[in-house]
Image 1 (spheres, rainbow, N blue to C red):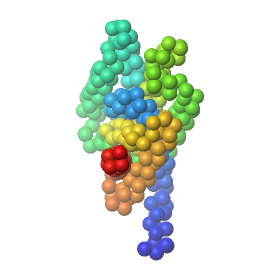
Image 2: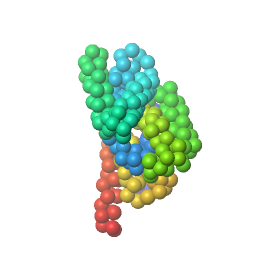
Image 3: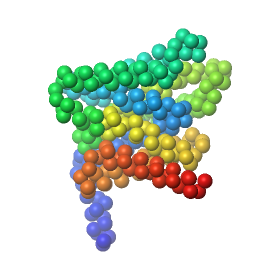
Image 4: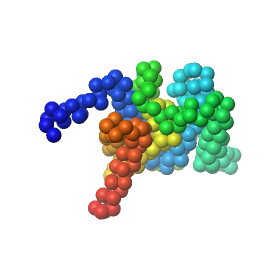
Length: 279
């Protein structure tokens, strides 16, 4: 392959505006999910991440039915989820609430069932397929600016609360003793995860968003033990999967969201095999 042909191969997908906007949207969503995914994996909240992605469904369905922003609908659903999990699990250590995993299960299944019920009133199932599996190439300019704003909020909060989040992640009991308040930080973290999930839903849909949140961070966790290097490696894995996945999607006519998640999963498997071989 000549240099000119190689240059055309590399640049051709980005000659179209919708591909460029899709790339920016995916990179922003990947950044938000990869950074927060480190805390999700480190705190063993993978189930919470899964729940947050699926509980966007009622808000997304209502948004499509009544013609308002999908991002707004997804965010509203996730805020209800985050608050519901926090309220139900508060006081669990004093037997005044249920365990967090049980609270997540209750809210997760209830919200997802509500979304399915709403879908039955809003039209045919095919009308909602893009909500379940995403359509990165149809991200609007308004959605893109929302994702950029959400990413800015997430990065800013992670920087401002880095010490508190790191300490409560390592030792929540000690954090409570010195007055940091691990319960409040958990609610803040779940709210930030809600924002990240809203971004991810725009890219890969309800069903695949949890993979964008968890898989790059799980890959990074095999090679790094400190949070900051883990975050950097998680973002790198996410962006490699996104860029490569979009190329594969463009040239092989595959669904972009599925291609991105499949690449992220392959990177995880390759990293796992490498760690098994090298010890």
